[in-house]
Amino acid sequence: MSAIESFDNIHLDLSKEGGKCRFAETGLGWKPASGGDTFTLDQSNIGGAQWSRAAKGYEVKILQRNSGLIQLDGFQQEDYERLNKIFKNWYSTNLENKEHSLRGWNWGKAEFGKAELTFNVQNRPAFEIPYSEISNTNLAGRNEIAVEFAVGDGAKTNGQNGASEKGKKATAGKDQLVEMRFYIPGTTTRKEAEGGDAASDADEEEKNAVTLFYDTLIEKAEIGETAGDTIATFLDVLHLTPRGRFDIDMYDSSFRLRGKTYDYKIQYDAIKKFMVLPKPDDMHCMLCIGLDPPLRQGQTRYPFVVMQFKSDEEVTLDLNISEEQLQSKYKDKLQSHYEQPLHQVVTYIFKGLANKKIASPAKDFTTHRNQYGIKCSIKASEGFLYCLEKAFMFVPKPATYISYEQTQSVTFSRVGGAVSALSTFDITVLLKNGAGSSQFSNINREDLKALEGFFKLKGLRVKNEIDEDANLLAAAMRDQDMESSEEEAVGPKADRGSADEDEESVDEDFQAESDSDVAEEFDSDHESSGSGSDESGVDNEVESEDEAEPEEEEERPKKKKKTG
Image 1 (spheres, rainbow, N blue to C red):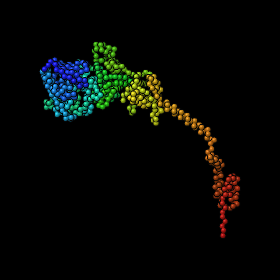
Image 2: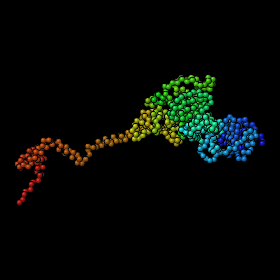
Image 3: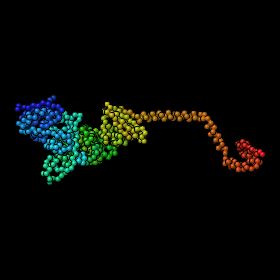
Image 4: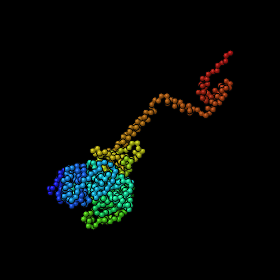
């Protein structure tokens, strides 16, 4: 064998870019084909090696003595004998040939190794998950556990010299596996879970299998561990998004949210926005943290974490940090002692550790009640809309952030037919480049002028459909009033035919009659069967009072004479 053995087009740790891999008696090295940092591994740190099929041909997996894992993919089948001699002669270890299970079953046995979690089907590995790729894990159900993977540049570093981290960044493509779930029923013991003999742990207490899997994975993947001690801890903090109560542990480079079901570890580098939003009830204050990448609960993504504190809740806190570190690293950023309202203390510590600017509502806008938050709703979800210096912010759910730079126009409108249409209005924010729109509904009408003035102050295009509708309605009312006034002026002179004459004749007859007239007519009818002289006398009396009555008597037909 020569002093150096070289292989081309080899990929380190799943990197997209290939490179040259060289083996020597002192160790091995890998360098990208396009140039860049070189990865090296000393032969004293090689604890074992495995040969197996992989994505780009054949792979050599190197188990480090410090629990690390190195993957070299892209070898040809005929390279096995050559590599086996290299590892046997130079590194005093055998290159183990490992075959994977190809049955495609989704049930098997999970085993925790030194550097990776292996899923075996009929005693053959179906797939392996390096602990370095696992970013978080949560109990997702009664017998179900979710394992989340590091995304893109959030992956941990496997090797040395930082080259492995570069390989991880290159894997951040459009599609990437981010979560896997395991269904683990029944009970088991710790030794059996780690692949030991079940008979040897007869005296060990059995535990719920999914809980034991969860605890073991956290320990092996070092999910709960962080560099350094906890600087500050806040217990039982109410979160509106995601909903629940979490304990907040703050470390030097990350913070952790610990809940009953979910547990999150978030790097400060993932914080993109930090906002302090006073609630309109004057009793609570909300802290809103924008994250990229967002938190995940199954299929649900949370780009914002919204916490709520009581405004008058005081706290006294001493940071768990040395005076030397405080002066050297956090000078003018943190204090060793705090005695202030709780939401202010949390804000100051986040600002000091994450080094992020704090955003608050713009001073140029307040509601008619002198508040910063506007009560409104997105579809069926009620919340509060805040006008910041550079953006809109709606909280708590769905937390929505819209910067003024992305806004094409703002339209004030009113929903037709609504009962509260006169007292409320809607705002529709249209985004640039066809990115869609967001509508905020049921805003108090008294805040219309203040909002319109603020948007114009920020240079936004404003369209007020409410005033336009009001102007059209006023014009229509004026036209209707003019038409009605013209009808009143023309009405008395109009010829309505015989309708007027009928009304006048009915009125005169009604005024002429009296109760006494009716009684006399009744009497005359009663005595109409008497003699002719009596009839003529009655007729004369009636005629003197009413001249119309004799005409009716004259028109009465005469009786026909009987003929023999």
